[in-house]
Structures are given as structure tokens and as C-alpha cells.
Image (tube, rainbow, N blue to C red):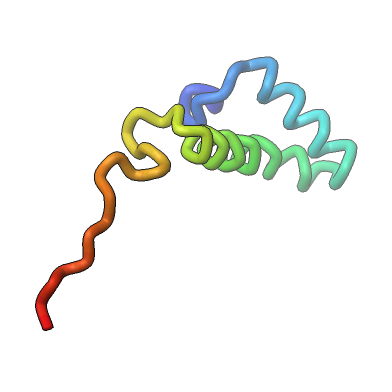
Length: 67
């Protein structure tokens, strides 16, 4: 259920929970999946693999010529 919400592979969720519990105990296990989902989302955006938000933008920024 959580994997579909954060769009992560089940093995990635298990590894994130394991790493979080080793690092911070129960609290780390609880916050590991949302942090992993956020890191995955940022990585997908920066590498340009997010179809909804391309980086760098496909249309260049042009400032208005009003003065």
C-alpha cells in the first residue's frame, strides 16, 4: 500500500525501513519511507525522468520587454 503511494519498488521500501531502523531505531523506520519517496522524486526531477515536470524546462524563460 505504501509503495503505491510513494511510487517505490517493494524492495526499496524494505531497504529504506532497514536502513532507517539501523540509523534511528523505531523513529527512523517510521520516517524512512517518506524520506525515500522524497529523495526518489527529487532524483527523478533532476535527471529529467519525470514526465510531468521536465528539468531543465523545455521552454526558455524570456523576460518581458516592458520598460
